[in-house]
Length: 295
Image: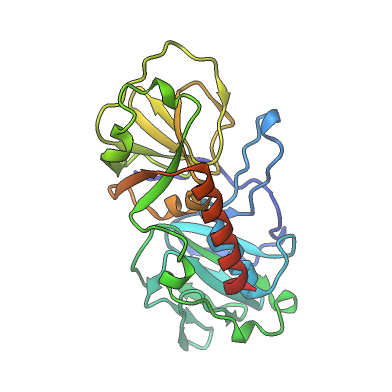
């Protein structure tokens, strides 16, 4: 069963004051943006599993990353109620049929990646998820939202993720890649996301991989590191540990790490090895596209 592995850790941005309260239970956690630079002290970056969706939400709302905003990452939605007047937006995994129910009883449709006014006392009732896994509800007080938030929209999924190769995650060889007995098996095979995956990492189920090396000294890991454990590969996400003692056979390219957040346990993954030059080009393409879309 899916669980969240870590509790909320204050990072970049986010509000101390709560704007939302949960009316019915679900599986969700409050997130802020990752904080890098403390890994040498054993502190992981943390933050949302899909940072691309959260930074997009902040851009749509016109608020600063360090400003007063509140974001919840959800895999099983409950019902939320706003405690003050806010502007909000849903990003990440899209839902169909989501509505905002006001105190008067009036219901207003809520579309994916379209900012909306949420008055105090109104409730968000999710519809049916149509794709992906994690969705993000981001709110900002009305006074802190951009004056032109009503005109802000995101293009469709295809254009928003034009830099991605859907169904394929791109990788680079890791530090212990050379010790793999079959260096092509990982990218030739298809892998299933295991049910015991969580926001720390995704466990992969597939063929047996072997490395021709003895015990290794624990060493640093990064976002997207693929560790080969006795039970099979694990892909580390933003809420990972900072060091590990298993062979680091591959690393997901930085542009694709956020995509992993939207894969559901049981879903099939395929990997493609690329060059460092390709990884850098994809990162630039993603960054430049985000500037055009969000700003």
